[in-house]
Length: 123
Image (cartoon, rainbow, N blue to C red; front, top):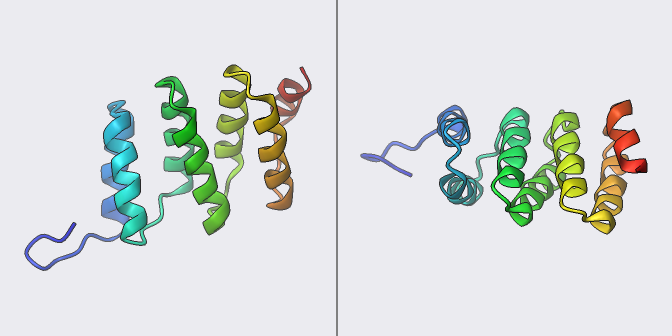
């Protein structure tokens, strides 16, 4: 995303991503996350959680899982809010095997899940 030879930094990327998320522009947010990845710019943990929530609300769980994979791959912390959103979304979509798979990743990352999230997983 160079403009006149000037490249955007992490703050710029995350601000633009935050705008897409706030305005519920899921397609644009998905494309922009891809662009961020290509330019080696990581989303903030709060943007990750908001993006996961947005993608589930827009019925696109595969992209929400991709965001989680980015969190795991790059060890973006704190991941608690993202983990909560991922678990809630997967449960809403009835993807129970995916919940157990991702919960194992969360345990490996030492993500602390809230009591309410744990209770939702038990149901």
